[in-house]
Structure formats: C-alpha cells, structure tokens
Length: 118
Image (cartoon, rainbow, N blue to C red; front, side, top):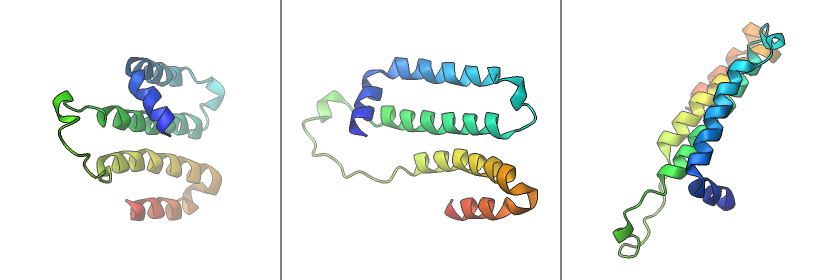
C-alpha cells in the first residue's frame, strides 16, 4: 500500500487524468447493459471509491515545508470523512448488487446492514 501511496503522490496530475477518463468512459458502456442498472452503478461506485482513496492520499501529503523537521509526527487519527464518503459509494454498490441478486424484497437486509455500519 505504501508503494501505491508514493506513486499517487508523485503522479497527482496523471491520477486525476485517469480518473476523469474512466468517469467519461462510463458514459460509453454498451447498450446491452441498458436493461440492467447494476453494471453502470457498480462501475460508478467503484470509481468513486478509488477516487476518494486517491484524494485522501493526496490531501494527507500537503504539509508546510518548515514544519516537516520542527514538529514530531502527530499520531494518525481515523479519517472519518473518508470513511463516510466510502460508505456512500459502498452503500450504492451493495444496494444495486442486492437488488440484482436477491430481488426487490430481499435487498432490504443488505441495505439495513450498510446503514447500521454507517
């Protein structure tokens, strides 16, 4: 994971370009998926998760250069904003997958479990 973080930090512009390209390509999904909502929603949710993680990695590297050596490192706190952003995308993914595989009536157990986690 550290290697991925270093790569994202070094290639911020490239990462943003790839994310924009991937989001644009979701509009070009073949028509055969138009009957099912699961493919476009799942792809969009997964891209949202990857984008959120990358943004968090980039934002956590912004430090003031004069403070790098003068302060001891602060203990890492849990990134609640990232967690809730990811849960929003995971909730969408869980909902469409549960509806696709278990139907309208049985999807509510999965949605309730996701809500309880939030």
